[in-house]
Image (cartoon, rainbow, N blue to C red; front, top):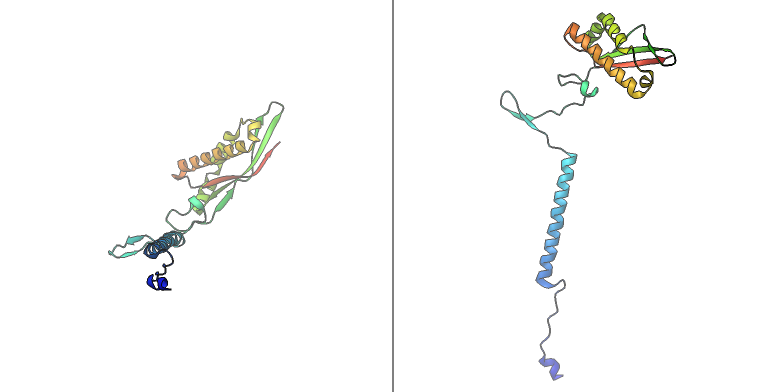
Length: 189
């Protein structure tokens, strides 16, 4: 018993490794909070993009207005507003051309519609319809039947017709004016 009294009582060890354990715990918490803040910042930036600032004519700094999406894609109103609705004009009667195939004489009947966004463009197409029809008929002559029956052949012809119609309108009015040209009927016999 005397021996037990002579030994000093041992101090209980601190759980977690003492001072070093506390430092490691604090550093781990700091890193976890830092990662959460960085990830939260990226998520916040994606959900709430910053707006650009612009200076007004009188020198005030204001938020730049967000652009409005255009309904017509790249062919919208070039003044920054929403796209105007599409207007169409159909060439009537349909265009009919013949071309040679190795087995027979073939006929192509096309109903062509042009699209523009201004009424004055449609009026320009109407007033120049004889020249447009003439040049489109000449453009369609002597086509290869097999090429014309493919999707690529039809699309190529459509693009050529659009460019030709725009060329005529530019020559006659100073502006291409029409945006697109469509085949609403395509019949080969």
